[in-house]
Amino acid sequence: GKTLPDDPQYDLHLYRGLWLLSGSVKMMPKVAKMRARPDDIVVASFPKSGTTWMQAIVQLIMYRTLGTITRVGLSENDWCFLDLAHNADPMPIDLLDEQMSPRLIKTHLPWDLLPKSIVEKKCKMIYVYRNPKDVMVSLYHFCKNVPEVIHSCPHETFEEFVQAFLKDRVIYAPYFENIASFWQHRGDANVLFVAYEDMSSKPQETISRVANFLGEPLDKETLDMIVRKTSFGEMKKSENVKRIIRRSSIAQSLAPRKPDGTNFHFLRCGKTEEWRKEFSPELAATADKWVTENLAAAQLAGFSF
Ligand code: A3P
Image (cartoon, rainbow, N blue to C red):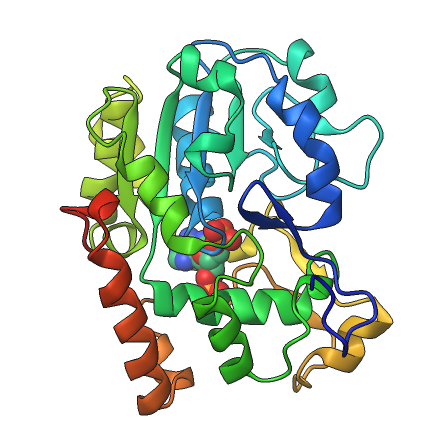
């Protein structure tokens, strides 16, 4: 069944093979009809893979300034998160036709559920991915602390959450199908794959790669500026990246108690290999086995983390 007994408000629904919040399911007809332009730029990913970070990088490359990233905004360099049911009327997707080019679009949808016109117009797409154990840690803390997604996650402990993740029963799961759906298109001229770990260990090189892909090669000064402005510390200070306050009562009751009790920052920790702190050796072994099995799939031939 779709309802888990312990959370009466459990809200995760299977839509064409993808687990979505009911709000996102309702968005899908509108998303499918979205009219892409050839110069739209799309950042795609499984949640918590470094999407926001890449959005900031792309925004700085294209507009030289950090606009709104995680909040709803309507100025020219604001991002439109396609598949999120925003609590706003009109929603960003309703205003896309009026937005100036190049438009910046974020999505967590797998390739097959992208609006047809994004594929037909061959929009440039940057696909961001991250070590799945770090994704699990990041997504767990996100789901436990952010009211908008809390009802996708009735799991109390990290271990329960990981078990659900491995069964593809978390928001935007299945994880590997998301990656595989884009990996099939890795040879397309309009698709670029970028690892969170590369953004972290070699920002200069990775940002240059993104800029060249976007047809906007950077001089050294601009490159240094972008590296600086998209460092974890600088982005965390930025007004444009969201600090999320837990406010729903269920979030309060489900979320593990934090020392400060109230604040969860979207930029939580920002490190690679953080999974080592949260996984027991047994749980890590179980997750690793799942990863190995999934990487053996034909559609992921040649892919590695
Ligand atoms: P953590 O929860 O591990 O800290 P997404 O944007 O896809 O939801 O991904 C969010 C993750 O990316 C979070 O991971 C967040 O801290 C991390 N992140 C965002 N901006 C970053 C930056 N400038 N440097 C490093 N990590 C960043």
